[in-house]
Image (cartoon, rainbow, N blue to C red; front, side, top):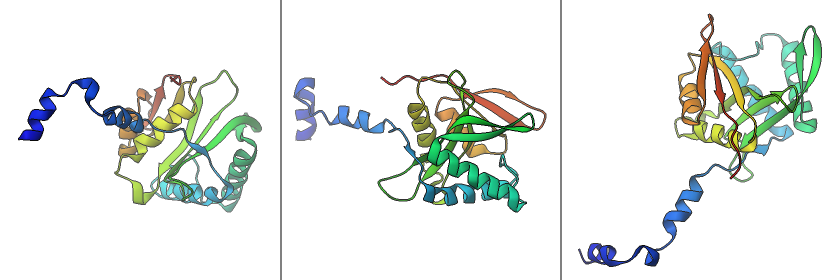
Amino acid sequence: MLTKLKQLFISDKDKPAARHKRKGAKRSRPLMDARNEDIDSFIEAVYQADAKGHSPWVLRDKSVLDTLRRALEFTVNRQVWMQRENGQVAHWQGRLLALRHGDGPPLGMVLACRPDDEAAWQLKFFYISREWKGSGHGTRLLMAVRRSLSGVPLQTRLPLACHSAIDSLEAAGFSRQYVDVLEVASYEAPAQWDE
């Protein structure tokens, strides 16, 4: 009771600044570039999504898996994503980004690419590791992507059946643009500027 009375009489400037520190701590830090050793966990997540029919790649053929692995290695080492376009291979800007605590394995990752500096970043695939799902890390990953790729709009497409991914997108500021006949939804987040 005495503590509550003291709190009522202490002026705002005499109160500790912990409240301000807590506000800053909620802000997502930018993601880190992925490492070559992270590619296996990314491909494992693609396998899991493919088993449910939610992957942008169909990995039933070893040649597709090998091509995907080489493209991811090229992206990690050179920040270039090889994109098939009109029967040829186009070299887009690419980033494979990881959400991690310290030096541990990634909690989640995202592959983003775009054809040039004027285009929006396309999030080709993103995931949160199984053990971290349901803890708000999907939203945290997507907010961090917006900060890491600030100044440019972000776009992504995913099946409507990906309920938790859609919830994370909407919580991170993405809005649904349209849904095609295959029930694949397109989402976009406006450019976010570092403040």
